Length: 267
Image (tube, rainbow, N blue to C red; front, side):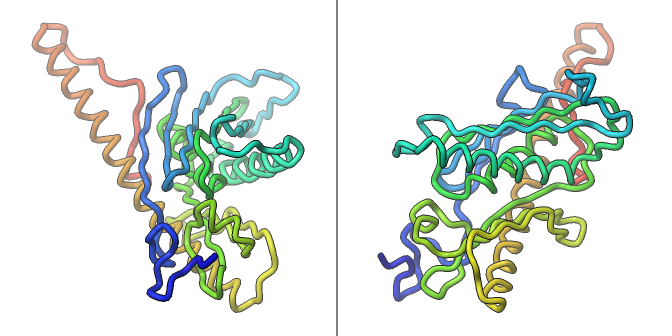
């Protein structure tokens, strides 16, 4: 199969260094403290955050920092293929650890002693890049829950097929057998790496080229999420202003507003 045409186009019409279209929505679950739906191409991920809250198991309570719990799952209908359970379970464990380790480095856990933050991530539709999409969805849900963080975290992957570095592989490209490098960064802290996973060997020069492309993709993802947070914050501010105006018109004074608050300037 030819993954890059002679004119430089991939199977889905993108250029080698082009991201898939992204979409995001915050506050999609009323029952969660924070939630987000994040899409990269045809990959769709739902994340929900509960907390900070009291630790459920007192034996796990830490008087110096918060306990972060993470659960990852793929919906049975997320792919058109039947997955082998053993392999799927191993991959789920790997992705769960990647998500938890990434968000633990991002949350200011020392500001939340004796508390617990639960992060649930479910893949609704899989078409490559699920690990990175899950991390992005988890960050947006944490931001929606107003969990204090040292920075935003953005994730993206890049691969190498037919001697060409490719950004943000879809499922067909991912199944092509080439190396894949998944990255997550703190973009406002000098692009600090908080996740780096590689599934096969690469020559040093090629690895550096693919890594640089993945980091550049992370910056683009970060800019998209920053804009999403800004628009969400503006929406909340408009709702609060409308609520205050209605209360004043009714003679009830100020107050009201949304329970969910974000400060987009923090990102």
